[in-house]
Amino acid sequence: MDSLEAFAAGKLAGLDARSLRRTLKPTHRLDGLWVERGGRRLLSFSCNDYLNLSHHPAVKAAAREAVDLYGAGAGASRLVTGDHPLLSELETRLAGLKGTEAACVFGSGYLANTGVIPAFAAPGDLVLIDELAHACIWAGAQLSGAEIISFPHNDVAALEAMLIARRLEFRHVLVATDGVFSMDGDLAPLDTLSDLCRRHDAWLLSDDAHGVGVLGDGRGSAHEFANTHIPLQMGTLSKAIGGYGGYICGSKAVIDLLKTRARTVIYATGLPPASAAAAIAALDIIENNPALVTAPLAKARLFTRAADLPDATSPIVPVIIGKAQAALDAAAMLEAEGFLAVAIRPPTVPADTARLRLAFTAAHPDAEILRLAELVRGLVSTTGVAA
Ligand SMILES: *Cc1c(COP(=O)(O)O)cnc(C)c1O
Image 1 (cartoon, rainbow, N blue to C red):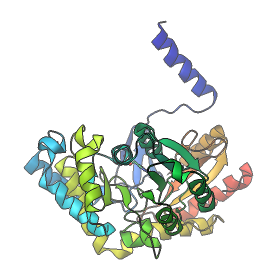
Image 2 (cartoon, rainbow, N blue to C red):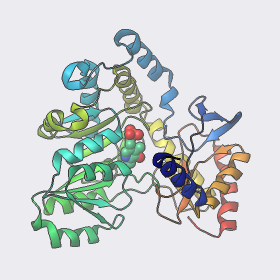
Image 3 (cartoon, protein in one colour):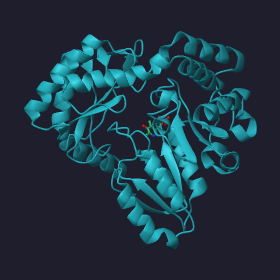
Image 4 (cartoon, rainbow, N blue to C red):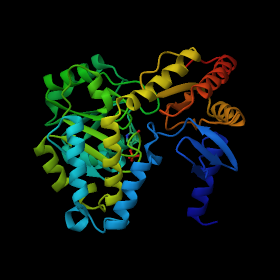
């Protein structure tokens, strides 16, 4: 075996031994709620399509029409010829929703964070990151070359102590957190965080991938709080908005700088026009259907009450199992019952906190939610680990 083959085979064997190998499983998302996998039809609690908009007739029609008119792809980077007018229309809509002066659309949420953070932080600066923040925040910070320190999850006092101790050593400080934590479903204290950042001249970036469309009247997690000032509001078009793409909302100067400096704007192909058209159609639905927007959290609360878990604060509910293999076994048990609840293992979550991460959508039938809750109560009592 040559050294590359030996390296790959050795890595895979190590992952297998720890139940940490991941494999792709072809899945048909039949209607965005029911999925077909391995020849079986399952009710999915593992899609981030919280409002089921990926399959909404108006969203699909908007994408289809844009493909017919403008083609399947953008053709080039936005700064060359890939800046279709639908992108600026979408940016205006996103800025309006978030209450900012401007917005910049990216190819994905991952590309947004990996483009934005290096545009505002460099060697000589400091990036402070919540320890449970999303992988693409860490990736963006690493690309920036700034010093990186993590702070304990949602611990504003610990963050303040770090700022007091070290703020003056650095030219600029950026604080980055998820607004809704993707694997735990809890919210960052964005009001106290933004107040703290303002007092210490630190720039707050909130990643609201899981907040837009489902919290704060659809405007996102920042709007769950009375008072926030978040200069860098990042999000994705790929979850509640139902399509694909990412964005950041901020002041005009911040956005103008991104459009000329973010490497994932300059050196990546623009978002396909059809993705922008689909997102605009989805925003129309979100802005005109307040009852739809509140439904995923209400469904999650129905579940947490029936399962004797702490009240859900977002549509994401973690059921912590512990060991990776135990989480895989729990997922297999639920799959035998007709539910898709994918096990989430390290390094996506910390060691010994492997879990089922349940995501509730507006369309989940109540009776099925209650049946799932009954099964999860049995699971938690047999594994002896409370969520
Ligand atoms: C999914 C996710 C992203 C990445 O967004 P994509 O559009 O899927 O690339 C970023 N941050 C968080 C918190 C996420 O959950």
